[in-house]
Length: 298
Image 1: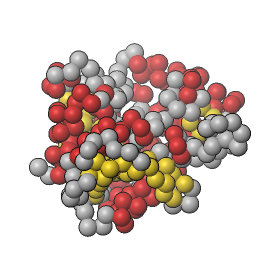
Image 2 (image 1 turned 30 degrees about the vertical axis):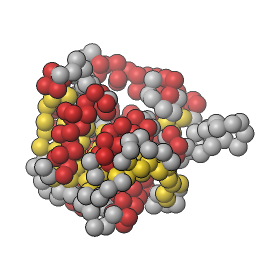
Image 3 (image 1 turned 135 degrees about the vertical axis):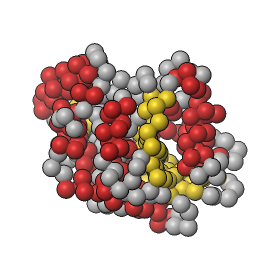
Image 4 (image 1 turned 90 degrees about the vertical axis):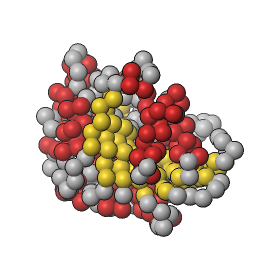
């Protein structure tokens, strides 16, 4: 445990997924009064450490914040039996994106709701993290959700020529590699290593016209259960989470009217933001502040 700021306490923890699998998390706590609880949910193949600065910022403003890794990712990947601090191979590891939602995200929401049951619970979803909100059965526990570059990521709604590169990579390189190796290797360009089932389901969704909405997942019915406030941020220079893709995901939340904000880098004095740039510290007094105040209802 350590302290990133004088008034923020940071604790490395583990908590169980709904099936008992141990998930690694980091809890960021203000040393003063806690006014809200916030759960930050990661993008695909992205470890929780990239959200550390933003989580510390929220805790500094009086929020109890949890970041965590989905199974098979970051510190939620099992260690190898031999070798110092080496992760276990993902060959044979059973997980899918829908498992991440049903088993891991669901458990993280429950853990925060039980631990901070007197505080409003907000949800920050980056890319897949936003998609997962619609798939979990307990999303009614969330009072406010802020999506950051979270979209229905069909290749058809990405910008050209990126959408053709993504389609070719997923289907001509990624899928064959996942079948051959038994997992999707990070060195191929996906970020962190991914379990085979996660990558194959992701590739199926990306190749479908309406992304996960074209799947037969029973969990899709959970989109209609969310009745909190939803604000989705999309950035004009993000080739993956374009406004049409963000709006397609938002349209799944049929019980509410989500707010979609389109932001240009120049709006916040930046040269670029893209799919990951929101979480850079340079946006502390602009994008971070805006989301923090919206979460609080300011």
